[in-house]
Image (cartoon, rainbow, N blue to C red; front, side, top):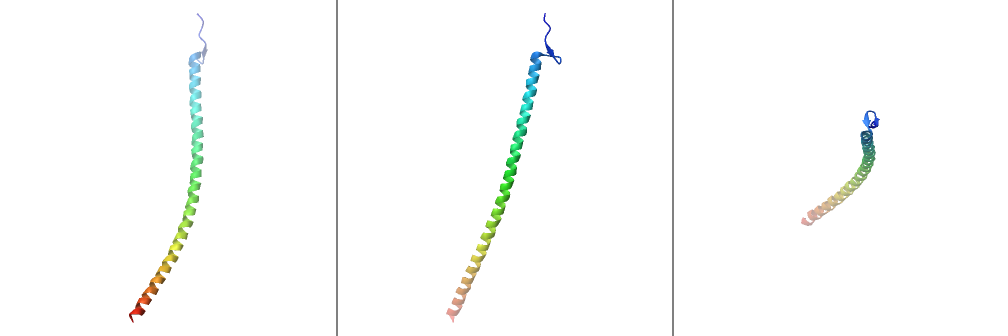
Length: 91
């Protein structure tokens, strides 16, 4: 009877299985780390885009607010003119 080959007290097939298992675990860990790094890059990009859009929205809001204010002043001026016209017409 031949003695079985052993490696660290394991048979050759058990050692190959353990080695394969460890390689699989390491491979999964590396892939997870890569995916996490990609997600972090995406989050950073999204944060930068969000900040950019906030600035653009603030500028647009200020423009709309200024236009509304100017339009409101114009409407009030015309209402005043109409009221003056109606008052003068009664006399």
